[in-house]
Length: 372
Image (cartoon, rainbow, N blue to C red):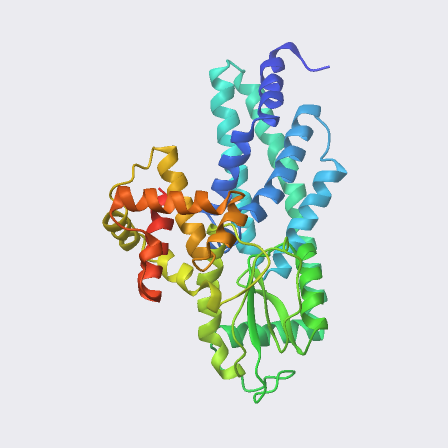
């Protein structure tokens, strides 16, 4: 039974253990102190932080040792970071930043609740004991994973892939053939468990290399397999020889960011994302285009947004009324009416666009306007 003067501190722990804001601020603290951790998708940091934070708070509240769940979570963190190419020092920087944030928060809020200084000191000491145990598990798992990778041919291949994509000199391309053309594939996948299935599909369809580069799954393969529509977004560049791949890797990463912002999933051709990639990098120009072409529309008017969404769907479907109507689940005459009303309000319509350049300007303006 906890002593009476500890009750406010225990209540604080119980309240904080279910507070989503604590997870958000701890994730931000961890990412702010390690560039390599911040380079990973936020969700990757969040899933590890949530497991560790829940376990630490549970151990504090119970007064016991860290549970097996939180110890296994610490091992997964160390192992995953090793496979993602994040050194021990980098991920420990993020972990210690999260620990410091938790300590400061509990001390500040404990003082505000009138928790005695001795109880707070005991709490901080317990946090140190718990996090020390977790650090030991993380470091051990990281070293074991590094040794396993170092002993395999796979690590050599991953190093070759990293140097190739970064444009670094690579005298021996084995197992790649300098005369063969390969597709460069980039993804936002950082979870090794998810990556395993995608990698298996990529390598099963043809010759190539797969591995984590810059914290995310990447590949160079001779053939592209089909993927289900709900697969995480993959961007594939046209096939080129190994010496020409590095610039396409950077373009693919830019296209990946643009496609992710647009909510895309599945395997996409880099060339199909060309316009989306370029327009995303120049938002101010998009706003200027929207102002010039759509000045008669009011962003807060639901009907005006409906007109803009219809016009964008019309362009996305190649200016075909029937296909647009099917996509929007309306009658073809409704599409024609909305395009006509858009012309009345703005003085022009994408149906009047003459040529690819004009249609592209309309598409960019509509996306920018709808994204306000």
